[in-house]
Image (tube, rainbow, N blue to C red; front, side, top):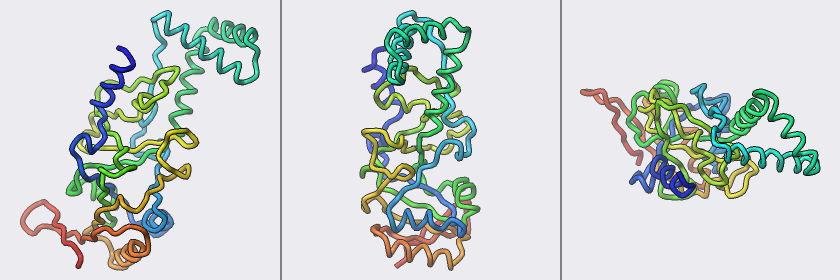
Amino acid sequence: MTEAQELEKFNNDHPHPDIAGIESLFKFSKFDVNHIEYLRDLFIEGKLYHSVPEYLNDPFECRPYFNWPNNPSKVRDIRKHLINVAMKNGHTRKSAESLISKNMRRKGFIQETIYNSIQSTFSKIRITSFTSKKENLLFWSHYTDSHKGFCVEYDSTVFPISYAFKVQYNDEYPEANYPSPPNVLDFKPALIKSRAWEYEEEYRIIFVPETKRQPRNDGTSLLLNGKEMKNVYLGVNMPDDNKQTLVEMIETGPFSPGIWDVSLSKSSFKLEFHERK
């Protein structure tokens, strides 16, 4: 498959929300009084926090395997890349070629080194997750501390929210390329999850700190411009004091979302949403 074909497949498998006809993305959060600075960062400073993979709730996140190629030309590409890396680290071409040739004769050494390098790279990327529906009862239970938190609706037609990619759910474990491609294909292993998570209908924004051509960020958070937040929904069991605190933060910050209370339906397993006047 050519690079152009791979890019086309990537765009079909992981479309941006506006391309997929999704106008809003939703993010569920706890109201943690012990870490209220995260809420201030979001609602007042306009900083959307992105976590590193080790703090996500799926232990398989961003741990792709590396399969040593059988194609001799790809092996030559790997050797050439490793020589260039060695030269960037101070070796002359001759010593770099000698070092890589020697290490490639050591059974499994290069393969293990590359695998560890890939794991190290993916451990440093930053991720935040969204879903396409606000009514999901499991999300309210799992991610808002049993409905004591809140849900933010973002405009997914506005950058940088529109930069989100759709997650693909698969039985096939993600595989990393080496050397990594200089485009969005490098993100692909971070956008594949087990089918066990399929109910989440997840979109995620990914950035790599200190890397060119990334959405504007401060190394840990995406920097929003004040136009992305459409609505904020306050959980059924959210204490009134926490609601008031959150509303005051919103009024202080750059966003002007609608604010909604959530209640339980009296006749079905559904949530009802009531906009505050």
